[in-house]
Image (cartoon, helix red, strand yellow):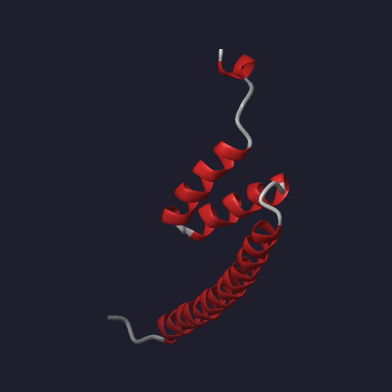
Length: 95
């Protein structure tokens, strides 16, 4: 290993880059956590809307999108079945 001033400077630069990357990763984690919390709140709101009005097409659609994004696959499957029952495709679209 080279212990010259140039090699020390390179190590300092590398550690600075690593520190910056750690900060960036932490910022992304907090943004991700913040985004997840926001999505969870929106999921809750859409569930409440659908409890009040099961025929709210947009709420179904948005809830399905958010459940998929959140990885809530069991509820996503159940909601897709309910959606298909409430809003069946016309036969002309099936041919």
